Length: 120
Image 1: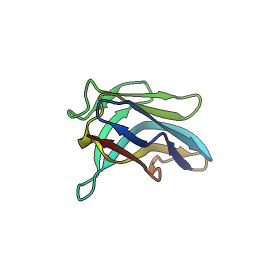
Image 2 (image 1 turned 135 degrees about the vertical axis):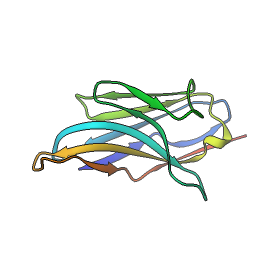
Image 3 (image 1 turned 120 degrees about the vertical axis):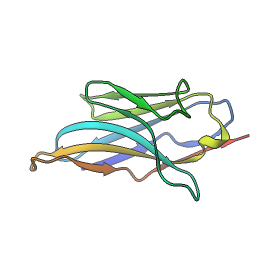
């Protein structure tokens, strides 16, 4: 199972970016998906999560600015980020709870991370 992120980059404060993550491999099913971020010298934190049924959860710091969505048919998850602030600068990681076809158990899988830099 592999998770590949795309869409990071450099943007000015107030701007927007859209992150995407595609899950591929020997996939049986995918439960929750989400985005985490880690800024220098800080712990990794949850940004947003979405269940298979579409229920969402956001960190207080991004509510009303970020929107998470997923396409179950394509095994993808997206993060639309608007009104970006310098404090949003971090490496953003995609996460998914995946049950491989050969397994009866779900495990957490991570992408390699994509850098988001917001300049003031």
